[in-house]
Length: 238
Image 1 (cartoon, helix red, strand yellow):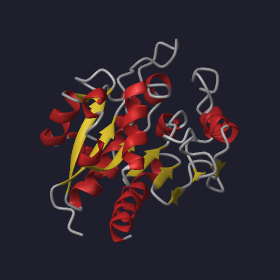
Image 2 (cartoon, helix red, strand yellow; image 1 turned 120 degrees about the horizontal axis):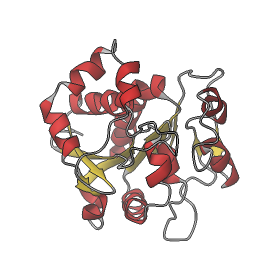
Image 3 (tube, helix red, strand yellow; image 1 turned 90 degrees about the vertical axis):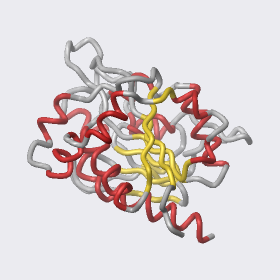
Image 4 (spheres, one colour; image 1 turned 90 degrees about the horizontal axis):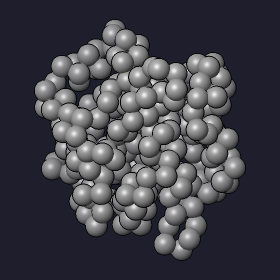
């Protein structure tokens, strides 16, 4: 299958406050730049959405963390991408249009923990896309957006599925376990997902279970991008 003119929907957070710490959060540079760059190089057009639409806030700490990452630096300097992220669509625009996309992708950053866990529009779009045979992907804190997704038979999307995401240990290491509304790994386990993680904190972990692709942390972002492409290819060859 040629991926020319195929589209992937990235759903970013609109949330920029890290609890009541006074610090800023938002979408994590590496977790957008790496998979978006990889998918773009495979011929996909990237469309960006967020709950509120308009400018999706970039986590300033993530820019600093990636200042030596050439992919991130060139992504952030690419007006084609940054203009789209400054003018995201509202997620609700895509309800009923899910089949336009090959995949729905949720990057991380702490922002999604606050505005994508229970977002009705995102939940609808994700469930419908999955049921239309599309790929659903999420990296780092992004999988929080999958935890409330129910399919039309009432079952939870990730129940019984092999998944990963930002670990509770990693959350404790960054000392934000009491700032986030819920711990991601704990919630995934609680709802019956088969949570897996790298042998050590910050290690690379990407898990594909059919058309669900998840990745643990920023280091896993490049492998996550390639795994989404592979899952899309596989879905088309079935």
